[in-house]
Image (cartoon, rainbow, N blue to C red):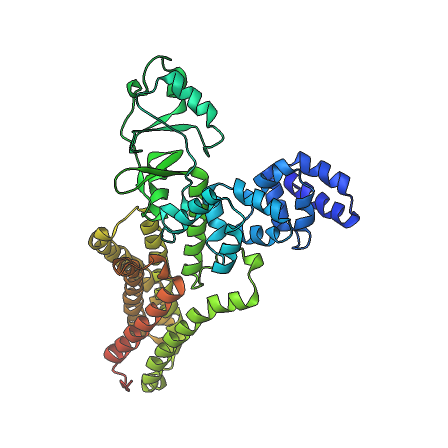
Length: 454
């Protein structure tokens, strides 16, 4: 069933083909600014400036702020310098930072020349924080009051500066040196006695985050404490800015997408797949594929070392893919569970021993069950000796693959690397190599086959 957005998008495309500008403006007036921004990003590059030019001046800034940064910059090249200055000046500090941080230095300087000095200083301050830090994500636009002000005076201040803050649902209380004292919901001001000072309003412990902290920590705090706004402070607890829920949702989406890419052995794209060109996709994928080829060559070399054993009992080859794939699949399951648990904070690095012990029993049970199941096939294809071999090999290989998949994310986390790097292809390849060694070593030992040599 066609959604309202899809209906508008189809109509916009038809109006562009007919060059019916009056009707296009009517359609845009009916749409929400978020939907207009989404529609622009669905259009061809040459159509975006034409639709954007049809918007009223008052809506252009709002729509521009909802565009992804790699759509914003090309659009600035199609507007006048005065309009570009207006669009950039009206952007919230965190949105402006998101636009500037991925541009080459020359382009950053060109855009900064369009801004007033105050906005330039603010943008350079945010860009000075480390990449992926809270400082890059925060906005410096917020509303704060003093503890000795009356509620009447505070509400007057809030009304006067409501346009300055990204949100006024939460009002911050600061002292003369801008140290953060409290974060109070607006309703406490509305319901309080007009003549009472702000310091008499009930307030609990305030949750804040340092500007140098990682953005993932901001996500955790907002989720854990169910916050609408998270204040950002420096080492001396001076209030620097705020992070809102919509900022955090963007971070969660980016990090989830990046983890999925890493678990598929693909480098982070940092842009829509639809907009990724051939060179970028090639670069992001070829590196890991070459690494995996090298790992698979190791497995092939091991198999070649047992050529005499294979010649003596050809049925070994029949069970090799089955057993090795089972170990890799078990490892992929464990890795996926552990990477996600580490990412959400459900488990920590210190929990590795407890989880290792539990995984040992679980993986042994899984391997034993699969070993019993495959032993029937071994009995049919090769007799009791082969049945015993494949049963033991399946049990050990599945257990080994599961333990490798569980431990690798912990090892990477200990080395301060992203646990998501323990991708499914990487775990599978590592489990394959170990599984080949286990399978053929058991075959030589249990069936008295020639060992050959690596």
